[in-house]
Amino acid sequence: MPGAEPLGPVAPDGSPHPDRRRPTFEREVRAMFSHIARGYEGFDHLASLGQDLLWRPRALWDLDRFRGDRPAPPRVLDLGCGTGELSRLAARHYPRSRVVGADFTRAMLEVARRSTRGRPEAGRIEFVEAHAGHLPFPSGRFDAVLSAFVARNLPDLAGAFAEMRRVLAPGGSVLTLEITGPASPRARAAFLAYFDRVVPGLGALVGSEGPYRYLPESLRHLPERGAVLGLLDRAGFVRRAARPQSLGIVTSFLGEAGAPSQRG
Image (cartoon, rainbow, N blue to C red; front, side, top):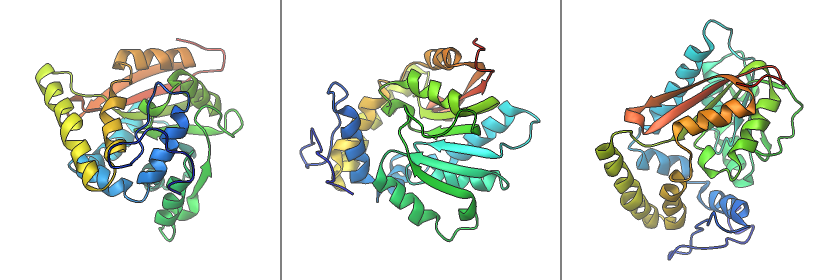
């Protein structure tokens, strides 16, 4: 629930504004997501001009193409599931799969459970509280690990990729969908101007200037596409790919898990 933990730095409207330089950064991120949990989905649809409703399905299609003719993954983990949008989409996309949605923010999980209740796919989805760096699952538990718009919030992305690899069975797949920004300098300048100026203004209108000022700041901490693929390599993903969408505004990062001893 909002206010359940100290907020740390705040914006002028009193909303949480995490500071990556502080040792309490992870707690501040949790407080931020607790603050925005109830309005998170609607605001993201607005701020992305509805494009996020297309990005997630396209990312799953990217995953299918990456996996080739292999059968659908029977056991799927949605890491950093938030309000459960990708968990529900994955359960519909893979109608025989079981999906675990994991997040470290209880308020987000409460929304996810409430939003999933009563849906046809609800019986195949479970939501659990978990930290990306210390997943409470045995090694090799899942056949696919998904995440959407999570990577830029992780202080140790390499460690998170290593945990994703650990909980994947050999041959399993990882999909990380993240905002990356267009490659074209002109398009990138327009993209950053929108996220630097317009999105925080929209957030201020709903009492959440801090979280949506943090958004453009967090984008600058995600490594370049090649560096993300390098981290997947070092984590033990023996085949890797990056699939941009929408002129590169978002990218699907994909990897195939090798045997535990395999690298590169």
